[in-house]
Each structure stands twice: as C-alpha cells, then as structure tokens.
Length: 191
Image (cartoon, rainbow, N blue to C red; front, side, top):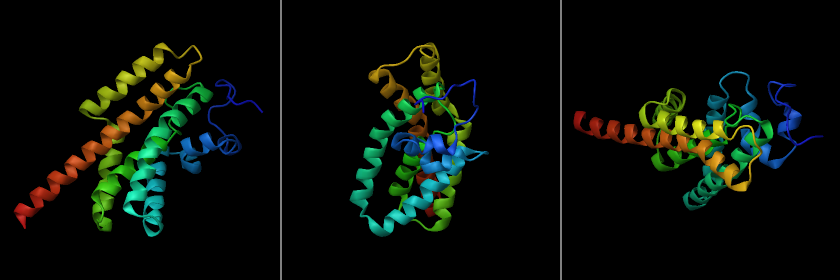
C-alpha cells in the first residue's frame, strides 16, 4: 500500500488509511478527523473527553508535558500527513485543534462544566471564523504553503508546514483564554 493518497482518486482518506500509521492516527485525532461534518469540532470534542479522562490518571505536570510534547510532535505529524495527502491543510487533520484545546483546558482548570462549555464554544468560534490576527496567521501560512505545493518537501519544510497548521489554533486558544479572563474579571465586578 502506498504511503500517499492520490488526490484525484479519492476525496477523503479511509479509516484503514488513517489507522495505517501512528502519525496518521494522531493527526486525524484517533479517527475523530474522519467525521463527515465539522471534523474540527469532532476533534475538539474528542480532545475535551480525552482531557477529562486524563485528569483522573495524570497530574497537572504530566498533562502539561503531554501538551507541550503534543505541540512539538504535532509540527512533524501534521506536516508529514498533509504532505502524504498532497493537501497542505486538510480539514481532517485535527491534532492542531486537540492540542490547542488541551492548552485551554489545562489553563482554565479547575472549571465547572459550564465554563468548559463556554471555552469550547469560544475556541470553536475563533478557530472556525479566524477573526483578526488568527486569520492573518492562517492566511500567511496558506500563502507560503501554496507556493511550495507542487514539490515534495524536506524535513524543514514539513516541520514549518506543520507549525503553520498548528499556529492558528494556538492563536485561537490564546484568544479564548483572553476572552475567558476578561469575562471572569467582568463578572467579579458585577457580582
């Protein structure tokens, strides 16, 4: 079986292809990126569930190490899998949403389910709509990646492409955290 997908022969990767390598499995959020509708939302929901489960078994320090390692690993995984697909920021690659939302969750915890749901809604809004700087980051990396789309990439370009895939989600996480902080500050003055 070929490592890459012929872009013209199939529109979307199969379950078998995704689970054919550890990198693809991670990039596609353990299958959540295969959701036929809104794979980014499905990946973020998977991240939320995995994080809540992880809290029972791991310390905050261990979770922070997993998130930091996930961001670094994600640069290679997302870049490599997008190279295999021949599409530079394929929507089914959801590892970027996963690690970015884990970052939001680790920084707002402990939080009740309503604050977590608020964080989820904000993160999905910022990731999908990409207002202001988030959109500029996304456009910058898409422009760079479009110029190198026709050629196979070396490791440096794969890592840079992967960073570009993750960067706008990290910006969405930052915006989410700022809005949550401002909301909590405003609520302290109201109550």
